[in-house]
Image (cartoon, rainbow, N blue to C red; front, side, top):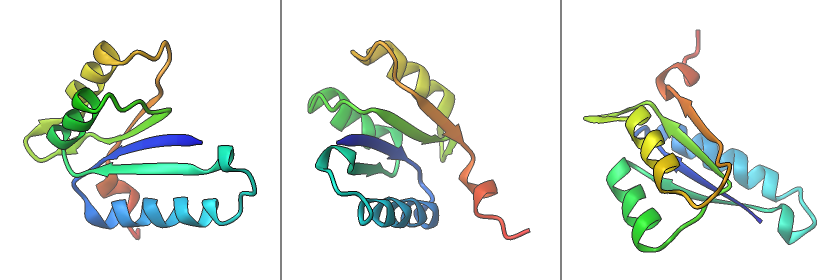
Length: 101
């Protein structure tokens, strides 16, 4: 099983990402190939789960602009506090991903 944390305040992109994950999961035949997606609307909610519940992820997809939070700072804190030797963090700007131009 692959665990992904998605931190983004853009609900439209969150729904798109969730839909893609669900479509992928519908095609897999082994449980270990399934993707579990935990979505967080801001860094605060992510940190509550990450630190208090000892959540571990295989990938973190992180919006760079989270209201008054900075995605780069959240990424640095993830690296500083993760027990993984390697934890990929993808930093994106979801407002550009959803453009129709």
